[in-house]
Image: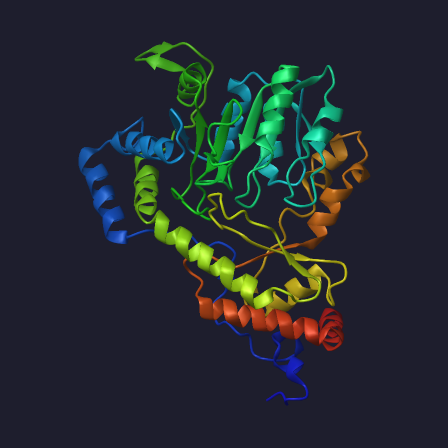
Length: 404
């Protein structure tokens, strides 16, 4: 047993027993009430209508559109497919400006269409694409802009709208993190030409796997519906280029089931966020992102910034947590501009995104969601504080472990 004068020995990296027997993940799926989900699945099997705009997909689309106060929700098989459809349907061409600090799918959705991602730096407070820097990157080759809402906090959509309207550029938002969130008291979903949600298993609301494109543009919504179903206008009547991007009925049934439980999930997320802030607030070298009290937020991610002045660097603290079975994550490290194929294909210097590089070295995401209890969070905070308070000993343990 570690002595009171050597508490660091209780840490798993220093020979102690891991605090958690089962791994704690950043985002385990929120499942809703299983009985209601299985009732829907049985109904789907009885109907023998598994896909192709069945009753559950239509019901789910209507519910998501209502939640975000938009006219149209076009459900898709994944958020990435939704982005690909949005890029093509809005007529983007040539070079598309987007942040590097985003999930790689944002860049891939552009490159997959044969277009060229042009990576823009972010602002340091909210980690969003900087509209002033976007303006500087616009050239005669620019054919579109993608803004990304990060951590459930919207980017400056109003400034990006004004810029793109002035320049005559299509504007799409990757809203994978922003379900149920607002900007200036206006729900996400109606900004730009369209906004794309993700319903991946790790998101606050999941459909097992899925996504959706939200828009108030009737013509664009019609084009998206054609494109997600091979371009079919009717039986044996293809009127548009398309692909298979439809959501199936079982996925929609899962989405409806989780949606029924959404307010409870959001309340848990909010309580977890508050618990982390209470447990780690004021710890030297650690920081949290601000959240506006008058806006709707889903608190889907617990983002801790491990500043350069912290006693341990981010990756050291992550190693400590992993040893305890707390599977903290680095998002979005190291940035799309430093990943393949972009780091090799681009002729642009990769050192021109200094804020992206700095933030990518600091961000640490901690476990949250309905699978994590406040007791779990309390223990995680104790581990973090102990590791930082005894950083010299902990670093020695980490070095010794690397040599084994």
